[in-house]
Length: 127
Image (cartoon, rainbow, N blue to C red; front, side, top):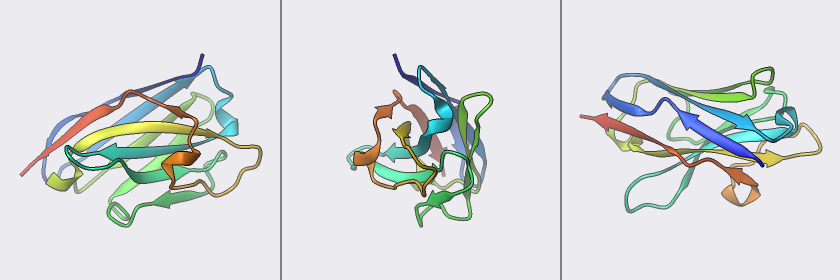
């Protein structure tokens, strides 16, 4: 049974930083590209960042580029999103997702590619 468990969400002031993590079990972690998506109230789920199986390739949404950093630890089966210079518009539920891949290719920003999802963690940025 594959499980993705996000942690680290919370309330932070604008301009502040927050790190959220996702622990993965039941899956050969090093064979999965990982991604973060988010969904704000009344909006559709959107792509935030993704990282390849080896961690050598990353993709970011334009809205977070230069502020957020995705990383992974294949020895601990975790993926982390470091969020700096947070803005109120970053307020959302953040979801971790995994895509099983045969090859270590550039990860996809499309939610349709991802096979497994976590329950989400709330990030709230106050102005």
